[in-house]
Length: 356
Image 1 (cartoon, one colour):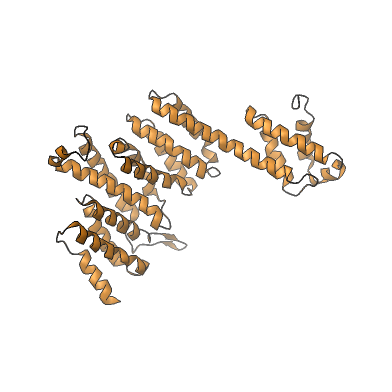
Image 2 (image 1 turned 60 degrees about the vertical axis):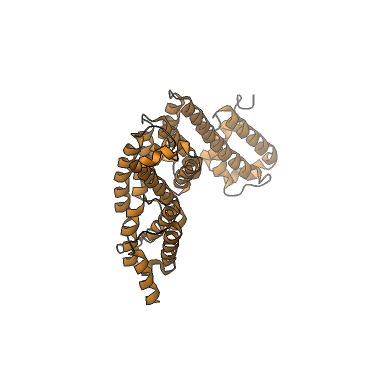
């Protein structure tokens, strides 16, 4: 086993350039260190130091392997019950370095005339090609993090988010890269976000939505759709800020952003309606009895009984059905409610305007 590890270490430190096949095979062998997991922390640190120097490698297949290996090297940077691991590569430190380099390569790329990155005329712009290679590898690395890491969401992931929006304009001419970039952002939106991460991420969203680059603003508001959907319950304290952000984008000067903002708003409305329909289903599922959870569900519906028409109509139908099925035995069912709950329920059921 030790000989195998020593052999792979020799592959890591091999600085000789070779053809695409040999380089890809070398990094594929290095990737097999994942089977040793956390047992070889010093080697993962060596891989990390060597790999981050090759993010702009000229061979695309090699860059893809490097992105995978770097993501694996950070999969063991986890916070345990007794603190976080200190023997493995530091993810936050790595991302801070990447962010600074991203800022520089974005500036380099944007100084180049707007021509296709794969145009043969661009071969003389070696610096620009390296900049694009670097950006593409960082996006692949970011995507692979969510595949390999147990705890992919860290403060550094939030800090790199504005750059993932900013490079949307760079990806406009490459459909494959554009899709990869969208998946990369979507992975973050699908992840479970604790309150401190949500606060930082919403701040970043608000900042990106003031960017002079309309592609970045559109990417940010598109991301908000998935973030709201997957983090509906823990994002409730930030509902007002998210609504304000969407409404602001509805009045954006760029048509594309207004269209995406309207879709995001419709997603929010659909999610609200789904929640109400779910509560209605809970109530209607017990037509001749009152389980312990039904009073609380009814109280939540009472709170939204005067919401917009699409929600109000669903609640009206639910209360009408509840009243019909529980009327005959109400003298028994009312014992399941507190006095305050009975008062609130009576206000809704007896309202002259509610069933008008």
